Every structure is written in structure tokens, then in C-alpha cells.
Length: 560
Image (cartoon, rainbow, N blue to C red; front, top):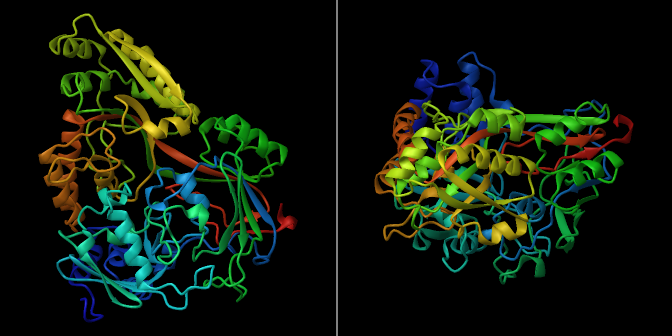
């Protein structure tokens, strides 16, 4: 495959499975795209089968929400924290990546339907054994300082991902790749030689720390040299205050009117503090046009306003009750299990999230993931938890300090409900609320905490990020619980190289069961998400990963 443009042999298997009704239309499009098939060839096949073409796999067009077509000009203001950043590859917060994704771009783009498209890439090719990936870069792309976008930029950035001194979560996500496996073939071609087969490479290239950097100018702090290929330049970045992005006039992507994107003149992120009530107040007063990470309470506060637009999506976003498995006393699985079964999931979901989601099963594989295996939801059982505590040497109960970030009201409600319900088992929980900025300075070090985790399109994307370890038993950068389970990791490695969805689901059944029984996390619920915006703006929608994909957003005051 790497030397020719022939169709990958696995695509034929997916075609047969689709025709036989073994996989859905969306799953066929997803996997054919991952294996390098163009949307044109996918559409041709679907039409030949009597199905609709694959245009629906593209992102919503900015022209779709009004008949007049896109207009140019205007400013979009978003209430959102503005955090400190230096190295984009170790960005740990989605909203920070959102502010910079308009400046720095990605090789691919995974849309809200989990279809992955080329972006800074023109296309990719993959060998029959899924171990050699050839990335063809888009030509005639320039950085905002005039430099040409070339293979050296990609090689440099990827090696930064894998550099242990950088501490990027990409090293855990792409644990199948080493620095020696990244080679430049020519000025616009990069070849990846993997240590093991992997189907999801193109999706991994859209993980939010995967922003591509200019190798000529980046020296460790993006704020000192904010050079990117994106449609905006970062004109101001003031921590805890604001980020101001101005439109370029020479961006590589064209709009519907034949001129370079973007349509807006400016995007401004305004930090109004961590309490979402302040963001809602700013939205209602007209100070901002949208706000980040809409909670159910905030959604209910604005959804009936006739001047407000709302877009919703079901996701694999969750809050994990994370427990350090490498430290006493939590290295004893009886204690971890005891705390996990003190979650009254229905109560927590209703109190913390107004019932707007699904119950969790103490595994980081969600019903929104295509390979999800349906398993039983653990019952709230304080009596069994009390027995486990006694077996582990705590017949009189146990004192626990639990840390959590205060920026989201549903996390606080989760913490308070669990404190109350775990008391019946003998857990005496002291809550330690921390500002988000403080929590994320220590989130991988604390013993017990509540950590929000964003949506990933596949379970085999989030599991390597959060629960993988290398051959020496060293946890990945984002393995906050330090849980290293050899059987789990062997099965996960197998799942990452398994294309057949049903066979991967069979492996996932085992993975979920292991994580539920002896893993290091609990989770009470999976979350619905909303985008809320002022009418008059077009092209804003809710991406399940909470990504602000606003290149084609435009404003028309006549439709407000």
C-alpha cells in the first residue's frame, strides 16, 4: 500500500460486512476513511449499494444555517478560562487547546460523527499489516510568518510528543511509535513505522495536544513565538484575562465565497472566572456570545431564551473517581472496590447532572464508543463495602481526603453525594475543593480525586492515554492512577490492532470487566453536552470532544 494507491485489502472486508448488514453505514465510512479511502470513493461505493453518498461525513457547513450565505466580519466572544501554556504538546486542558487550535493546526480532523478527514494532510496510506503509515502533507500551506509548511515540521513535532522531557500525553496515546520510527521521505511526505499494528493513527493525530509546530521558531514556549498555519494569529494572550485572535488574510483554506477563510474578523476568549454562573451572567448581559463547558444548570437557564441557539450531542465524557493504585492503602483492591460501590449512580446523575446522561460502570468505555460491550452496572451496596473495609483491616471505617476541581458545579455535586452515601459504609470523607488551575498542577499526584475526562471517538484512544504503562512498568504521562495491569495491557494492545468491530468488542468485554473488578476508577455517569450561542452566529455546533471548530463560523446581525 505504501508504494501504490491500491485499495487497502481490509476495505473489501468492510464492504462485504456493510452489504451483509454486519456493520452500520457510519462504521463503514469511519473505517474506510481510517484506511485511507477518499470520501469520493466511499460515496461511489455507497451509491452503488443504493445508499446515500458520504457527504454527510463532512463537518456542518457554515452556510447551512441561513439561506443568504456567509457574511464576512464580526467578533465572536467566548467566556472561557485562559490558562498558562508553554509547550502545546503537553496541553492538559481542552479549552486551552481550543484557544490555540485557531493558530496551530492538526494533520487530521475527526468530525462530530467520528469520521476522520485529512486536514494538513492531503491523504495517508497504510500497509496491509497496519504498521507502516505514509503521510502526504498538503502543499502550498504557509505559517503566519511566511515559512512553508514542510515535513521537517511534522517530524519535529512528533518527536516532541515522544520526548520524555516534554511529558506529552501523546507518548501514551501513541505508545506504538518510537522516535526512530518517524522518518522524512521528502519535503511533503512522512513515514511512520509502528512497533505494533494500529488502526486509529489518523484519529490520534487529532488529539488536542497534537498541534503541529514550526520547527524553525519553536523553542519551548508558544506564547513567545505564536507561529501557526491556522486562520488566526494570537494577538494577545493574557493569563486569567483574555486571548485575542485576529483573522489572517492569506490562510490556505477557501470559504464558500472563494476567498480565504475565516469569515470572522476576531475571536476573543474572556476569562470570567471558574464559576459558571459568571459565564451565564455574561451571556445573558450580552458581554459574550457563547461560553465553554455548558453545565445542565446553565443549559436550563438559557435554553428557552428566543435569542439563544442550542446544539446537543451524546458523548463519552465523564468524571472519574480516580484512586492511586500504586500507594498504600489504595494498592489493596478491596478498598478501591469498596469506595466504588458506594456510588449511588442514579442519585448522583440526577443531583449532579439533572439526569442528562447515562449511568457509568466503573470502566472508561462508554456506550457512545462503537466497540462498547454492555456490562452490568454495579449496584450501590454500602453493606458489601463495609465488609470489604473490614477484610482490608478497617473494621471501624476509614478516613479519606478527596480532592476535586471547583470549576464545574456537577463535579462538586458528585463529590458531596458520594461523601454522604459512602458514610453508611464507614468512609469518613473530607472534601478538598481546589481551583481548577491548582487541581491540574497536582492531578496525577493526589491519592483520591475526581477528574473530568473529555470524549474520545474510540475506547482504544482513551484507554492508552489513561491506563497504559511501558514494559518497565512506568505509567504513561496521563495515567493519573498509576494502575499497571499486564493482562489489561496485553488485551488493550490486541484491541488496538483488531479491525473487526465485533472481535474488538469481544476483547472490550474482557477489558471492561477487568477494569470494573480490579481497576483504579469509578464513574457514576456519562454526559450529554451542549453548545449555547447567541443567534446571528452560524456554523457553531457541539463537537463531542468540546472542540471549538470555528474556521467557518460567521455572523449576520439580520438573523439574530
